[in-house]
Length: 196
Image (cartoon, rainbow, N blue to C red; front, side, top):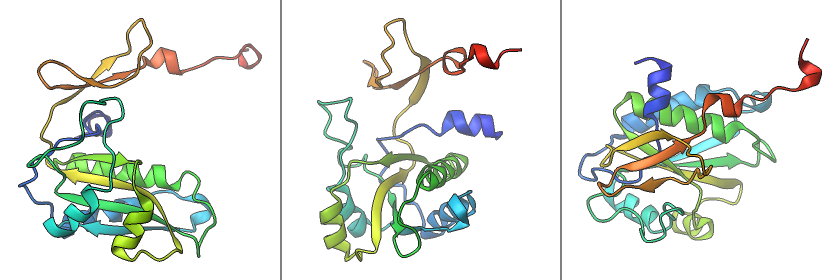
């Protein structure tokens, strides 16, 4: 699969085939991709907490918020929940701020997941205080976000943003998750002072 194909395939997945496990080895391979991503000053301040067992996954799931644009949907139901998680942490003993590092690491993980036939979703709505207490995460680690992973249990399609400019994702009547993206010509800007 080309990088272009992977980028199109690496959509945020929010419904999974929960019964299809993701191994610790697979999670470690994904973190290895994140480890190799560029980072500010090459400080390598990100750390990763891995979960692939049902008991640990259950202790993470109820601390996450899902799909703000789908207010009538409370998140994946039984059988649709992620089979694994990667909690992305910033080590404050290495850096005081993490800049663009989490984004690069997260995208590397999602591209690797897509290559492996998995879906993933970066979840930023996390009850960080309860997650820290529940797993005894030391204060030196800032909880940045959680990546939910598993075999996709839904179809996600990219479409072009309509005339109304609405970029909110939605589910259609057939349950397909539709994600509007701006056209290439709408995201490339030109400035008169830069033109010859």
